[in-house]
Length: 134
Length: 376
Image 1 (cartoon, rainbow over the protein chains, first blue to last red):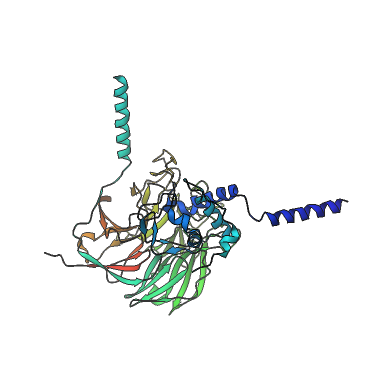
Image 2 (tube, rainbow over the protein chains, first blue to last red):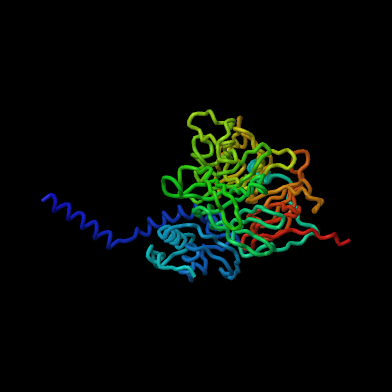
């Protein structure tokens, strides 16, 4: 009887982890905030506004909202070259930060849901894993 | 009336205190610069460190983990690096040639490494022999412990003194409450070793039980500039402060430079770290910057190429994207000047065997500064 109970528990756990493969949005955002404070804040600043002309803003950024995949790619592999954000051209370099897919997803969820930003959907680890280097 | 008076007083006090936060001589704009820049090598995203190996050959580190040998406008990858752990501000960092490089072909470099226990990484110092485009006889001379997944504050610069020692820095690894003030832990330190990696017996904490015996000075935040003063032979270090409070320190054995017990800066978020600016037993900086310039790399210009710069200090600014010239007189910073304003984020500054100043600029590569005869 006891064994049966164990089997039940294990299979329930297995089932739950299958149907719920990712953490809650709330947890992802709070983990992402920690990543942001460590890896991003020096350039993009606490308020997500960046430095005009040097480091692009994330707060209310049209580029971020309209280029989710490119943004993931930028964080995952680094980014260089011209981009236009809210009408201003930026031509800098963001070096690869060495974050794993889960950390990239977390920090994306944080920046997509802070400073007045509101994302429609949560960024998943799988989604990050699928983004390839260009 | 009284109310207005006190309001006035508060405003005045606020005004005074906000003025008092600025520090040092005001930086002066460039006036009719009599030099031009020329590209030595391009196409390097983050040229973190460089070292001359002959009169026209340079080793350049690219932070992501590539070592280049640069000659006549071409770069060749040098093989034989250890595995580089690139995370946040960490990666392949500084490179330096041994004082006897001409005969020994020995080079030193610092890099993030995930060796050892625990996830994450820490800063390590390596030596190797440079044979054409290959590193041989690779040795890890030191590695900070414990590994950390933090992206911040790896340092790291390398310098040699006249007595045969090598110095290098490790930043506080994003753990300021724990690392910099504890001599039993790595991080937030300047280290001194013999060139073979052994620890000099007269290091200041050599006989202290449980200490990291390689430590030479402590209480540092994130030092990314280090050199031997060309005249005094002393080791000069600059370090990134928090918001405000970047410092230049002339380091001494066993000295405590105070981070985070004392600082002239505040948190990035604007909240205070401490109200203490000096405390007994803690060293005051030679100079500090408020606001921060985010200093990276530095060199004394000692040639006749740039008369005004001679025997003065050049420091790269990541934040303001210029080279800062600090005129030093009677052991004080007397004037500050912008050089090459808008050039880009400067990572490293060196003087070449030709006496010219070379800079590493993000997104560009290496540039050299060539004096122009004055127009009149």
